[in-house]
Image 1 (tube, rainbow, N blue to C red):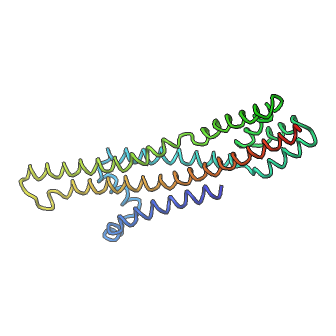
Image 2 (cartoon, one colour; image 1 turned 135 degrees about the vertical axis):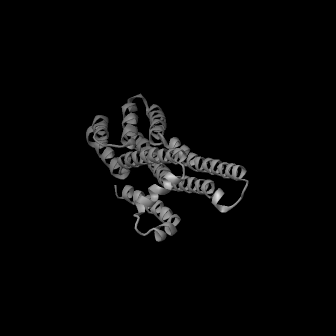
Image 3 (cartoon, helix red, strand yellow; image 1 turned 45 degrees about the horizontal axis):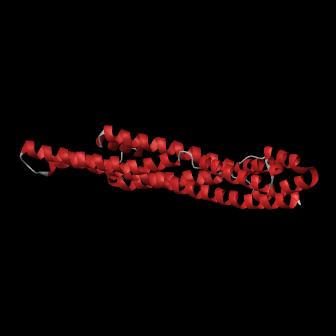
Length: 241
């Protein structure tokens, strides 16, 4: 869980650092306002319709990311200890004792071991096929909903840029109505354009940090699964001799 806290803290640091640097000038001009008040004001100024969609993308992305991080940390198993326990159980109590060890151990590696042990009576080849097949199933569970997270990463800046385009259109509409290109006429539209872009990029940065952590965690677990599966097949070969 320490890694989860570190990942969340890093994402929070990036988020607040980016927002604070973006709105630092606003904070110095209006010192009486708190940071949250300034953030709320900027959110409203950036057109709540588009800013709200970006916020929803951030909330949903964070929900998926945190759920995946918790799941992956719970799925992490000490494979060396598990292999040692299974080997000891095979030597002392046979296949049923080894299966009992797997039943009492959490994580995808233990589940894969159980499937291989459950089919060892059918032969080593069948046990190996079961390990490979069920390994694919467990890999799919590890990567569940990660594609949605990547979607929100791509969607957030797109929504921000859409707000930018709409803000610029609004600015040109004001120029056409006023028949004037003074800063006061176009400032509102340009402000919306810049704010939506900033919030979209900040959202994408936060979710990208979580995404990279999740992908690296999945890769680590998959590597352990593959290594442990090879060790299990070797154990079964020795056991059947």
